[in-house]
Image (cartoon, rainbow, N blue to C red; front, side, top):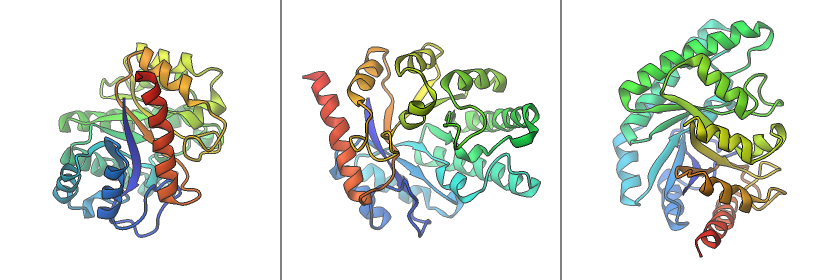
Length: 275
């Protein structure tokens, strides 16, 4: 398993709540490399304004992979796929394609879909079907680009559909496209799941566990809350998960300390598993 940190891209002036590491984009990349992670999860707002070749080359110089392209910045801005205003929804769909193109350009295997999907609200099953249609079309485009999508089940306070891994797997069947999988987040799982092992195992057995977010019980960096990550990491290893563990967490007490302490905590647990 490899470690990544969620990092904002250079076109965003104001740091978001889960934007780990401070400084210019170049400084953030250097800091990530110094912490010994294998990759970064990039969270752009408008990827069309970015120089993908510069981003790719900078990361390569620091021996960092792009674990995923995150849509979290868009979701937090209110630009969502299910926005009730058709013009905003259309803009979100276009932006999703931009994320996919950017992912392909920088060598990222995945684009995440969490709060960016929006809420079904009173539309219920109709909204869910609309979301499945949107993601089916996006997945076809992503597949052409050599990229896949991952849907993130989120807790009931942040989403009104797809809150558990089981619901996520069911929704993937509705989408019906091989280029869509699941992203499971430990903070959301703590609220919605009755165990750690069953959701991870079910997703893995279905061949759909493609990405994992690590955040503690208080949404802060691992080690700052109540989650015992040791058995989670051991279980992921036991079921054969070999992809990224990406720390996507609040930046308290500050972006650099949160990143450093989270990496140290998870790395120490991984090291104990191999010693």
